[in-house]
Length: 230
Image 1 (tube, rainbow, N blue to C red):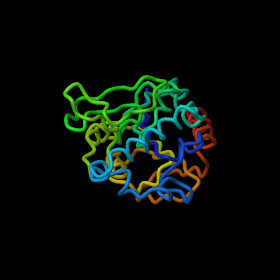
Image 2: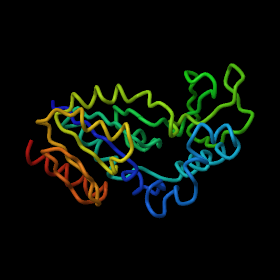
Image 3: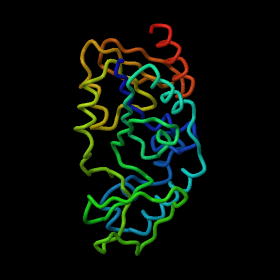
């Protein structure tokens, strides 16, 4: 069974109603990166960041996976599918994918602000964390998110998975955010790369097939292509 490695970004979840950071009406238009996605911001105003991520979790409870997510589950009948996602939502999990690696953390988890190995899964119906909620060693819980300027602990594992790809499928990412964008360079030269995005995305590689559609329509077309070629 061939190994299909899938790299997903904000575009796949945007169809479910999750605001992106980079679109003209995205979150970056309402919040500065420096205010909600850096360690300095956390130290400067923990209450602001706690509320910001509470609202992101609340929104997550109100949305559902779309066919972009669901189609990847169906592909597990044809491939060994490994998903590497830049997204912090749990829509891949809720769709039913069996192998998911989160590069930038998970919205449904929190961790100790001092002991990063102390990570806690929030109950499915809980979105609110408060100032004063502490880890077992007495330190404030912070979002389990990789903020700008912080190391990306899972990038090494992601690179290992990408090296094993027989096909790379990229969905809904501009490939502008590093180190995630650099994963393309770990794909073997003979491996075909399928890119699903309605916008132009620059990839300096051969064997790139661009499906200029949104996530759901693009995954449908990809499924049709691989079934025909199988």
